[in-house]
Amino acid sequence: MGLKETLKQKIEEHRPRTAKLMKEHGDVKIGEVTIEQAIGGARSVKCLVTDISYLDPEEGIRFRGKTIDETFACLPKVPGKGYPSVEAFWYFLLTGEAPTAQQAEEVIADFKARSQVPQYVIDVLRALPRDSHPMAMFSAAIVAMQRESKFSAYYKSGKFNKMNAWEPMYEESTDLLAKLPAIGAYIYRMKYKGDQHIPSNPDLDFGGNFAHMMGVDAPYDDVARMYFILHSDHESGNVSAHTTHLVASALSDAYYSLSAGINGLAGPLHGLANEEVLRWTQGFMEKLGGAEPTEELIEKALWDTLNSGQVIPGYGHAVLRKTDPRYTSQREFCLNTEGLKDYPLFKLVSMIYKVAPGVLTKQGKAKNPWPNVDAQSGVIQWYYGVTEYDFYTVLFGIGRAIGVLANITWDRALGYPIERPKSVTTAMLEKWAADAQK
Ligand code: AMX
Image (cartoon, rainbow, N blue to C red; front, side):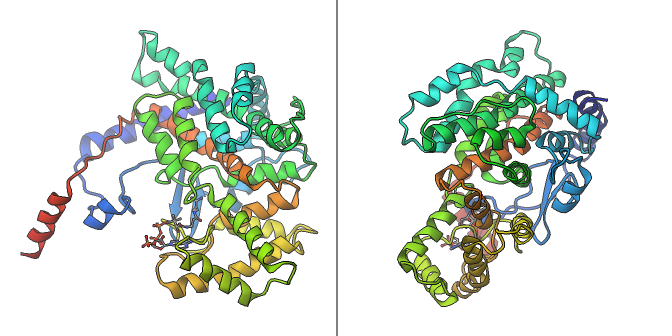
């Protein structure tokens, strides 16, 4: 059975579970909200539902119930390569089932058929000032394609049926995802490679074609596959996933929703942290002026950052309370790759890993002093020659699109309503606080 038929079957199996919970158990309490949570960014408030991934504070992410290693192990690898295709992973995220090699090949063929980027998107990118941030370009390119929306066309068709709305959402999510490698690579080469472009190679999968269009040799294709899969999903409460879900809840289409999510990813406390990590390390190296980095010098630089009121990029997390397994997975890739394990930037990042948790613990503010995904990802990019670090969050965005687009397809499948939490006033909080003291 192909991806869409399998997805349809999974949706039909799942719908009665959601319907039963709503009808028979809708009033069961699953948590309470404190004043701290209301003012403090809804930390730990359980009010989102997804089965696509789950983030345990100690263990880290599981995709469809599987750890990162289990996920890589269960999916068919691209022939002759070390990692599964993004297309196989898309199948897995959508359905919860690992595809066979044949099913993965079918999705690869489907993506290829949808991958052509319209010329007007290129025109939009070229019309933007060349010093625009790559994330602004990426978001603009996505929203520019809104006129292609199959979901919006279906909504306006006069035959809109909530039960079928997942189908056009699935179709346009696949359309959109399949175009992202070409858009990302176009931005990269326009901005940093003298506007010299490399045409897409129809024989390659998502990650392979991205590496090819970027102009970076193997094993960058495997790096791209690993990178996109690792960054795909981190349950639903993070800014990019939540924004995409929120915008889609208004029955906005995938183009509007993903573009909005990408804008959230562009914040330095979220996806832009990978750019900030490289900016920090490069600034540190410059200040050293050729001297060898030592743990003492790193410790001083970290304190300087904290004392200047800034955060240490790549460290801390709103949910995680241990080293992010996405960090560990990339670290292992470095340790297992000849050349990378002795690479000075990797050694520096490893040294920061030794020092930063102690500094953050001593400062006593961050609830989690351990590194997140962003502390490590730039090293690998840099090693393979992608040193333009203001581009790094676009890479994150291509990966994140896989998870959030799978999620909004399921949002439509399960008929999730428009999101609309309730706000209260400060005076109300003060009254409730006073009442609680009586
Ligand atoms: N450096 C310095 N201070 C930090 C810190 C860090 N890496 N992480 C947390 N803190 C501070 C917070 O700013 C906060 O200070 P405040 O009381 O003065 O406001 C205090 O510690 C408590 O914060 P927290 O509850 O531990 O974290 P949070 O849930 O509010 O924020 C996060 C989480 C990720 C935004 C924060 O850890 C941070 O700013 N980290 C650095 C940026 C970063 O790496 N972001 C990427 C996260 C992963 C991702 O989304 N890609």
